[in-house]
Length: 72
Image (tube, rainbow, N blue to C red; front, side, top):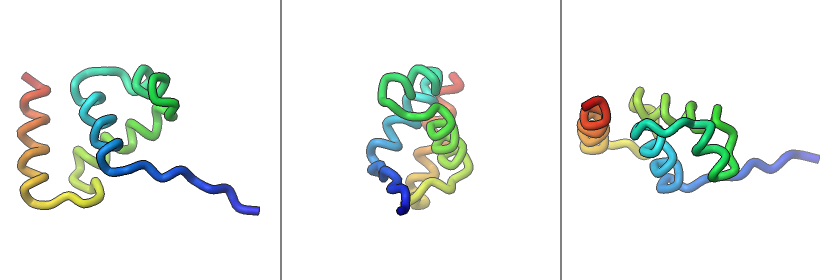
């Protein structure tokens, strides 16, 4: 018998990453959305490294600008 993994939509993942980038703790985000905080941290790392699924060149530029805004 195999274990079925839940698949999350790209939009949902982006919402979680944006919440994490805005300064909210992955632990709080995880509790609110019934997710493991490590999963949110992994998505955030993938996003920051440009390995997030379905990234294009425009998305990369937008990602860099969002990171800069969050830092300010």
